[in-house]
Length: 588
Image (cartoon, rainbow, N blue to C red):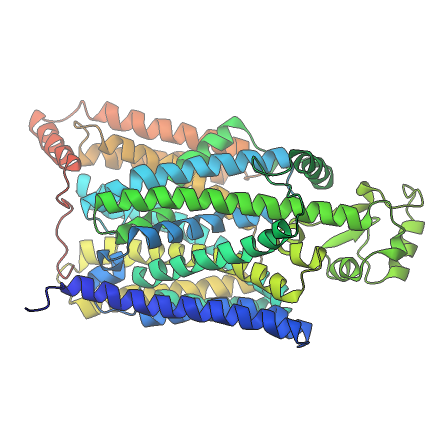
């Protein structure tokens, strides 16, 4: 009897084996790092091994799954199993919340952002991504342009999506570089170059194949890095300040301390009802999140992957919240009620690095701490909670140091945080290059190009975008939270309402083009006339633009010939099928 295994199954098994090998290698390496810590290897070396090995593993996976097939590069060959796609989707989504968790936030604001984020990602993974996969599209622009076949609409849509992806890419790259510089104690510029090299290895050889399989591995790193310190504390019989499942008294105490240390939020990040609505809607249509479902075998597989992504995202959020709360309590137990010259050494080390102020100053030793508190008029002889002010990044990366677990476990946490930001940057960069290289250049200008030329163009865009971003971030810093907030506002203002119009049978391509242009004019006028200092105002403008897009599209649909509206209705009817109705892609 002959072998009845299909070529696609053989290819998936081959890729699966390579990824399993890389994941196993990381697990063995992490165990060796813990062993090295126990036998007395220098702590600095132990602390940097885990994040370095994790990023090297992601780069290795990207290189191992390199491809010269169009479907492999743009859609991961439709080979990614639901279990891997779900874990990878959670890894990509977690990178969106890292900049917010790493900044001082009030407890109520973090809870609202986390719940809204979970709702938004659930919408994206359970509803929108399966539609994208069912249509056989390579991107959101590909899907919408197939519904509205107009060159001007396609170009406008590509420009909007490329801008959105560029914003989230810059946010992920900046967060990854800053976190790596902190954990490896290197210059930020060196961190940028190192992360850029990892991103090039993940995206350029394999495109979405590299991202999909690397994201699955990254999900495992995140669960281990965040979960292992918590599991060890649980095994030691320590009550955990966790939401829902933990000690609620300890959880409430941590919440009160966090709100006291964070202070009132600035206007740009103040949580509001409109802001949360924009956040949820923007997440549902955010291209980097949706790209992970493109590699599923079919719509049903994409739906299963979405359900798993929501589950794992919830697990990661609970682990992150427990980590943050546990670190808050560990800092309070180590410092509150103590003399400033009798604090643990790790607190002085973090203060010297600018991550925790004592009596309003950053100090590197006991003598400096004593002098700083002696000069503070509010100091009453013993440290109060108000005399300590930890930064947000300290709270999510220093649980191991604060609880005496050692540098090996600190390194695992640093590895988890590094891969979160790196995967967000990788998915965003891939979506950015696809929107230009495939949705614009190939679909409009060069539809007869050979596969090698098509992939060469997209790979060139990947490298150019990566080099341009590194150069820009070397010249000036950015606020990752602002970049992500702006990207979500643009999604809610432009992509979501156009998707709604695509569901109305009478809407023609010309109607959608006019509506999208009107939305761009409103947003452009707002940014020209008003500086963005208040996210609430930005959210209100985004919702107004979304309403204008929908209103213009419906109003103009009553103009024109009935035959045009009938053609639009036939295009709409294809959305109900499972036949991959987006125009067939030569080479896919």
